[in-house]
Image (tube, helix red, strand yellow):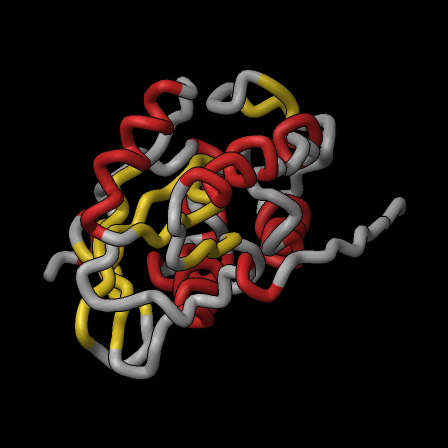
Length: 197
């Protein structure tokens, strides 16, 4: 087990704290590379206890062994996001880690706003679909525990959203139109897909 950390310094005026987030802001998602080191207690319970698999079990849907899929390196976002911080006035950044959509996004919301996320805005990677199938995990629990294919969420002023999209396209960066910030009570509201209205 190898662990590490880094310490950074930022000018107070350059900090992205979420204090600019407001209703009407646009949510843009950046893809993950897989499970991203989150939810592994549930992954182990599903794969090794319930399904009786080993790390060497070949999973045709993955095209590789279970161990190879679960050890896919976590994507790091600085190369994509740091130039954007310099170029745009990003209102918020949310790393979708343990706690998924329901616990992470509300941390940057003001008390009078919700994040409305459209679950059909992107295709959920096969690893999450198989984990849900193997473990019979409810939809809400999946989105509370895992990133479901979205590792970073950018909160962008509606007036700057087109420029952000154009920049991401120029960089050949895949992104998803996740939804918007709406009036509410500081929570994530999942819409569409399996969630209905």
